[in-house]
Length: 461
Image (cartoon, rainbow, N blue to C red; front, side, top):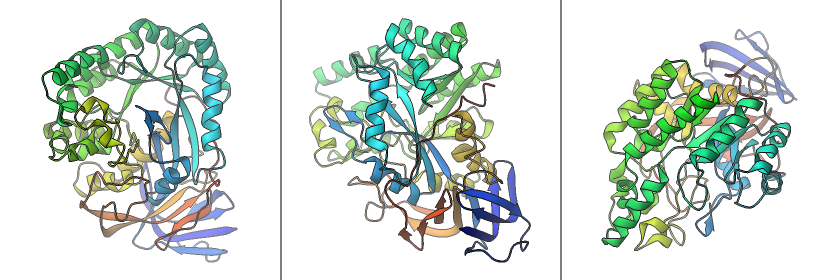
């Protein structure tokens, strides 16, 4: 099956060029000047459109257990929604429960995802129990194609790791060339602030943000960076939300330390004002780290321009308002932490292009090329080039749309961006050469997605 995408503007991290793209089977066969090829089994007209490498969302949580419930998207529904939004690869998190092994955890997540995903997928491993066995099993995970390990400085009693445990895991990462990912918030201090708020009768959702101040994200980020410096480990800060943390990352990068960071669309567009919405509506916006005061947003956009923020992921972890978020009525600490977003990342970052916050090439870089390089998938993913997987998005930059729960495809009963009008829309999506989105309809299938065994980060070799 040969598919010709013609007359479009091909956009890679290096820039944009008028070109045709020829797909042969599952891979890209050629990127040529317009008109070189004139026939194929299928022709997709892309005049006036961008032709992009498929998006890579390097931070999702499908079917994730949390606080007595599980995130609402399955691997089938979540990857279908991703495809609708131009994301053709996700990297999800296998979650080690304390007292279990990393390898049994990986097996469990394969059971959830294998033969169910609509687009390609990989895994990171959450390490919540650091001991001799789990440190040894990190090596086995790398052999199985999982070479990034997330740890938590938050959630005492659930995921929390002590500084000593973090140090041991970082030493193993240095030894193996793998990546430590860090949820950087001072969970010990936060838990005390939460207890004080509840004891004084402050139980509304906005308290989630007020008890997790940006200073405690900055402090934990700085501490993680110092531990990484002592051990020589590479460090990737997940879902960075606050200027305090960004300043610590920028300072480390300026010295040449291997410190990287991602942010998420919610921190670029939403704020603590959303957490303060009345009638418990604020619970829809409870995630950790929390939404910040609006004045942090300009710093985050600047971080994307300077590459102190290298990646935009979603931390997609949806919980329905009815029955799930409502578990925290009267006690904000019981609201499941997480927001939906996997479907709208590409569109929301395109608004940054429209507004002049980032360039067209930078949009592709932070949404596709850099996550591919960061997590060992490039050049199979993240680029429109001969030999790459034919994960391709035809994007209409002039289309108008309004985001709404009525039209999204995520398995959640609200939109965090309800009523937001945006410019640009995904028109056609190919996953490994197969058309999965076209003509306003889903043409893919559950089980099309393949597991991606990843190489080590290309920023470390």
